[in-house]
Length: 314
Image (tube, rainbow, N blue to C red; front, side, top):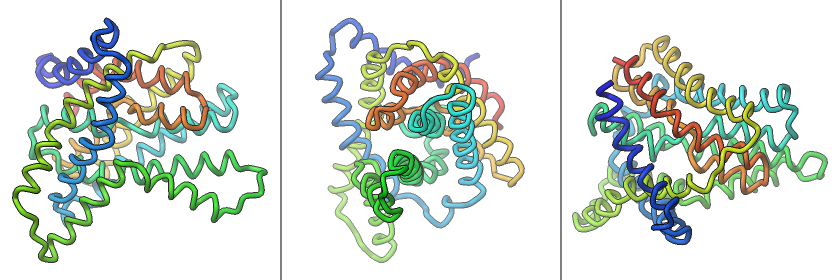
């Protein structure tokens, strides 16, 4: 029980504080939007840039770590899509959006601070390796599937649809931060030396990223209302909080994943869907109510499910 109060609760208290001040009107909607714009477009990409630039690419990008996490992620997508299509009889674009909610865990804003509090900052190397592929891979997959679904019967070529999807991914600030950091990492190995003042400034912005984003996340969650579609919402919560980490846990054991890698894979997989899952649904106007409610309800439920997974891990 101490794990719940010392590791998980402080992170969710920041989210809850943001929710409280937005609910009471002490922090207006425009202020929340401004804070999230700073966090998502500048501070968090800077955090990703710094982390990718310093990551040991040779040791952390390994199949034993990545396969368990992404096998679970795509299995959760498959369950979400199939449940929406065959159980709830949703339209094709809704099925893709619901599947994406199950697919896209909040690996950064919740996964990083909770893993760090549970196991220390040295345990985050595996998290950063997973996160380096998270947005580029999952956005590319989600946008591509949605564009093909939307374009069915339109006569657009496969190449044109794929180019539209790739362009959309490369324009996102998180992907730009990741790719820039990886580029600097490779250049540093080739002999590039950046001045210490540059890194000091980058670190100052990066340290503001998670507190600002967590507080802003609470303000954003206040706007969502759990309304209707409870079957689909329950499916999304189960796929995100139970199925994804369970597959990561089982697959990690089968592949002989080490203790630190297991912690990174399972903890990252056990996070609730991120706000980006709602933004994806909102962009395409598909299953927005399910996505918004799933983000809110799963985030609340994850306080208990994360506690369970922490106690199962070595």
